[in-house]
Image (cartoon, rainbow, N blue to C red; front, side):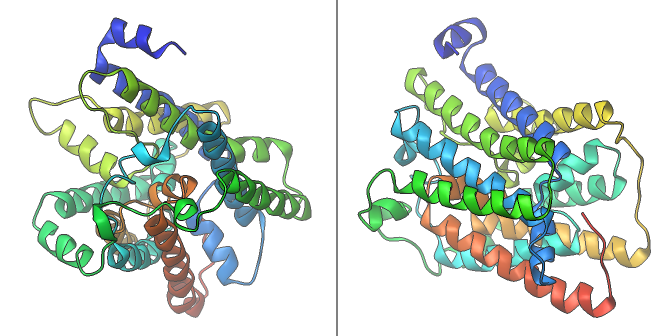
Length: 354
């Protein structure tokens, strides 16, 4: 793609929003058709199973590593210019926020990305949970909860005013990331074969990881030619959900990658569900489930902003460029999700899927 020609046609801010829309649509289509969800994978793991949801999540994670690290090796992006790498990392935020995100996604029966995908198919539970998630994320970013978030994040931070690149910190060869991604991919394919996952599901599962790479490459390319500073970023839903909410509530509203991303995911998911005949109105099964979903969404909103990203933003996008605090946040999300499923859902015999 000739990014300069696109910028000359639409200007920089609309181009960034267009790139967000494109990235979001790829993710939405792939996630809807593959059933990708970190919450579902953690629940399988918590119940002693390495089933299809685990295989799909591993495939997404591994393909994100392979595509992103491959793009960096051939010069299509540079991790050190990513927004998430250029700011001070928070170990305390990654741990506490990751635990909250993990617990919240189990209570809400879906990680933020999955809630947005389900909302596009007519799931009213996900629409309500998603709105609560966006409001709490905004409150944690600029509202009443921001002082608490900032205090918790400042408890333990990375030195030097920047985050830590794990590959550089351990002085590993540049190709290490690609090799790690290939290793996870082999494990994912082995699990997929054992669970007899169809090629179509594998294709779309890999598409989720591809969407992460698309976001990195497009925003990096735009940053190289833009007169004004452009953030190098990719898929995440905590900040974009809050920014998209305020985009429709405030004037003047500015276009950005974030503003295109969330509508793109919704549109892609809707189109995939429409073609696959998966559109169906669904609501809360009971008052108990509604309370759990609302509490879970609130935990994800605050926890995701504290951790520096949601299950996609920290767990896949940040992990794909080996940001140290994002790998810590990902582990914390797994721990929080497994513990919450064991303490809340298993004790009550709940086996609901996302």
